Image 1 (cartoon, rainbow, N blue to C red):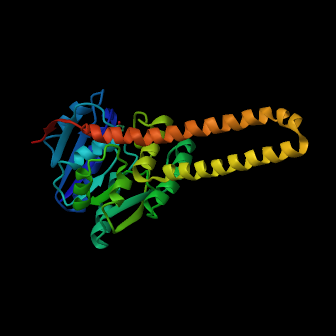
Image 2 (cartoon, protein in one colour):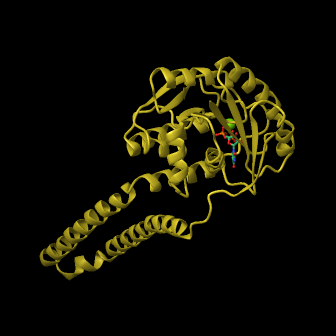
Image 3 (cartoon, rainbow, N blue to C red):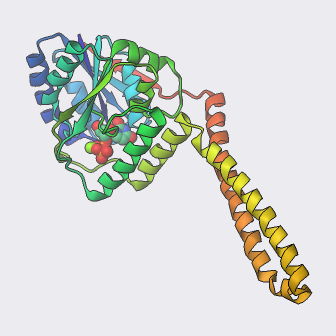
Length: 307
Ligand code: UDP
Ligand code: MG
């Protein structure tokens, strides 16, 4: 059985064409299927439209109590899946549903646990593509997995991987990276990409940056190590600089040292700046620890609507 999980946040105009195309594509795949729409606290009519789908084959609608963000919405969908293969797809039709059979086929033929996708001819603005490149390079480094496109959420996972992700209880999650912790056989296939069907993107620069920071701090201690290196380097430099000042004073006398007073200020500012930087990064980790110990739910389900 194939389970498709679709996070939905204010997508009322996209849902009807999405439903039709999903249904067609899944029938073509020739297996039983379910489609789990997760209403992530939409403020428009999305939930009503989704409830209208409930009579149709395999449709289940998971209603969250408020907006939790795309990744938490998907995890909540994961928590109720029944299929052996789980596909995630965006609701705005940027990912063509017609690619689903190819993902399923790849997964079964190569017995892969995770099948990612690479967006060919990506239809997004340059302002989205450049940050994507940085994210992709970083994610490759952090996870040590050579996948090319981490941002595309049209992906397939084996049920075991999905279950482990649900069990993991991580608060801030970036699903494609999280999956790499629980899977060995992973691959990527090329897929098409389209413009958003209707409505506007729910992500802005700010949200993307936050997602990126979550990814970095939840998957690596690299920033902490950078701090250590920088701290060490700066301490060494400071000592060297102090020694230099002493030597110069011996050779050129006190007058020279007085003129150097501004240099000292510069050094001071540099160190104070570095200190704040260090505190800021530590703050990020402490913030994460705080999140984890509070153990707030990642999502709360109001109701699962199904036939
Ligand atoms: N989404 C969601 N909750 C949110 C933001 C987005 O469930 O808080 C869903 C949204 O409905 C869509 C998918 O996540 O199905 C991707 O969002 P969007 O298309 O806005 O992002 P972009 O394609 O611009 O990265
Ligand atoms: Mg989109």
